[in-house]
Length: 630
Image 1: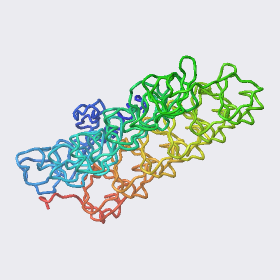
Image 2: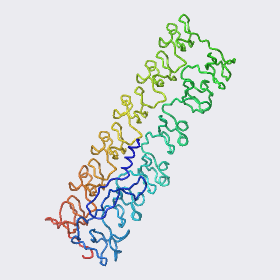
Image 3: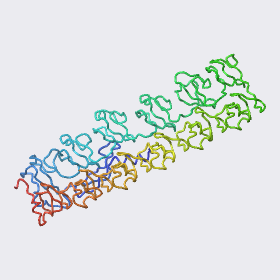
Image 4: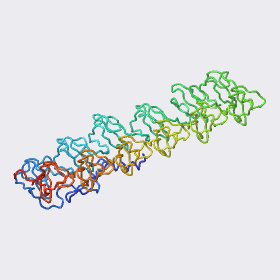
């Protein structure tokens, strides 16, 4: 992924947005934590005010007494103190004043985490830009919200990896520009970090630049020196760079300059004296590729003799201006009896030639491949008569086989389809020739599902071979998927749960069919935006989801009604939470306490939209009376 694009992505996922100034004029704190640097206390100037009932009220509502340190209260009583309503939790309030201490006697219903509150399992709070839910009250109340320490991220979020967190199964994190997922809780807890892959797995690794600090697994794909490599042995790959081909292999083997005495792995292509050879056996081969012992020449060549090298029978070399043929396997000088001179004469139209005979013509070497045709045409005039040899240059009159490699218009090619390769010039027709040593997109190559290509500096993988062979990467939907980036691409095919980055926001596929029809953020039930807790009309919400809208916090009350519905706009969809203020759209249950026209009421029956002073209000509401006054 482009570094600039990823830096923007990383900054937005590490601080999920909750809106500012929620119904209050009281104490506020900075929430946007700098988790990239791992400092849980560093924040920006984006402040969120702590929501409570104290919105523009200077006196306690009727029914809620002002707190008196010397008063007598019972568990569950409400008291008012300096603009905030508190719940008495237990009898330890004597001679103390709110807000008190953790495990203390007072609790504020603020949606924001307050270290003075004591939380019960299932409660949800906002902290440093995220919603957290208590999973274990005995652990959670000893610390601010930390994943795994009695708390969990409530709404789906991806944060930077933090070694102090204890992650649960299937939890996602960012680490070193890559998304990881927990697959084994115990191993992930013990792992030094996600790159160890102990308890972690990478999500959509795609293609990344080779990094020797990364632990690679079989079939991982990297780019190294402009070429693509994949892992064949994870242990060896983590100890060697891709060019060694030790633990690595290539999709399109590059051609490298031959180095004497270098240990080349099987399958390596080298350029030796301008000629192309392939290693056929890793363990034993002649020192010089021209020796042809477990080296395969890609055309007929006459290389210069290399002293000290072992030569296979029928190998050809040039020595003192003459071409020699090895009569048997040997390491002798060509002047030795193990070699014989090859008498190559200039082409003569009056000579009758036989199969495999050599001639020179216009300064080039040719070999007979079809005697009948060779005897009725000069070299280079007719297809399937003479093959141009001692060169890699493509010739339209040559007969090529599957092992040949040719050089044409600055690029090396090999036959993909031998019959068609013998009909068409390289780089002009599909399913004939393919580029050698290049992972660049080749419009004339026939691609299959799973093949990779580099195109305009981006990396792609075939997902539909019919479409991929009709279009260049990035042109048609359901042909090529761009890989190695989390950036949204409208031509990609996405699956359920996939993540993308689009216009500075992070999204996750909600419905795969619709996600593949619509750009993120443009249609309901396609993509869910996950780097914010702000309400989004296109997100799909589930029971108990919490969102922020117009600086107020809402919880899903009715899943069906909540979809595509602005919180607070219709009844029985979203309940506003974190406030005692009566809301006409909220659904209330027996025992709920509200404040209406500065009077506290307690619900007798469940209701919605019935105000306490309505004609039938007394059926549903009664004046709140603290237990100590009943």
